[in-house]
Image (cartoon, rainbow, N blue to C red):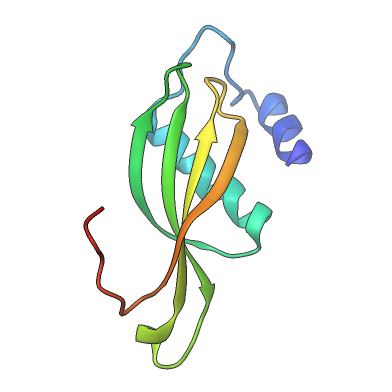
Length: 106
């Protein structure tokens, strides 16, 4: 990820401390950085919330174990926190479940 940060600053896509990261940019950053951290691809984005410190909290669904049939895939819901510059400052798995498992209302 350090290489990515240096590439971003070299090609001018890094943000200065006064500009705020947009929600779209936060999602793009999570889609790029989380697979490198976990070793699994992001299948979908489940949620996006603005954090108190002008950063973002993005909830991403990840296929942790692919199976046949696909309805038995093991999925994980990860909550990822980004600061106002778009740097990943926290990530944790909130839930692990089978794809065919009915969602319970919390």
